[in-house]
Length: 168
Image (cartoon, rainbow, N blue to C red; front, top):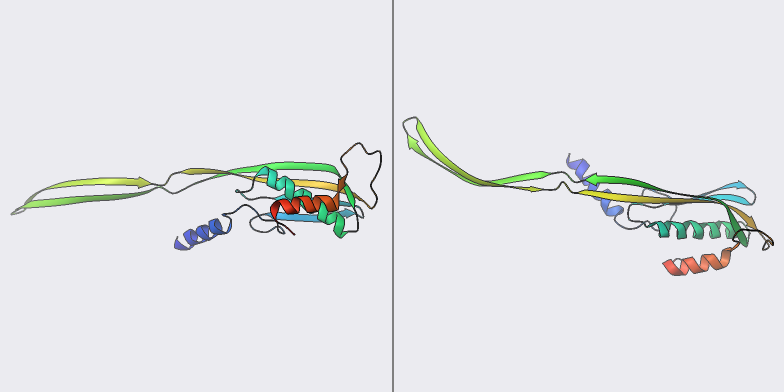
């Protein structure tokens, strides 16, 4: 039981902050996969301390980086998905009783009194939301014309979102 409590405390300490901009791991992060030469799927999964807006920004930032890393300057989003996993955790309830007892009597007969107070703690339920986002992007070396969707400049997007979060 002590090992389980220790593990829980360590996990809470590690995940006590919003998901950072990192490759996907225990506390979330981004991942990407090449689907075709110029098409990639990019996703970001946040932990329970990550807001939806942060997840949206980080999936856009990673999309820009993927385009640039593969020699492209522009990209469009051809499919996007967002989801939120909701869960809860209820802390265990503990009870502690403090009291005094006294007894008196003799010859096989005793009489006593007891006075005590019980304090309960725990039992709080915490609800958390873990956002996740994914973009399927199509990349371009030159800015495409006459496309009825938003065309992102990968370098500018990377700089703007990176500066907002202090990411180089």
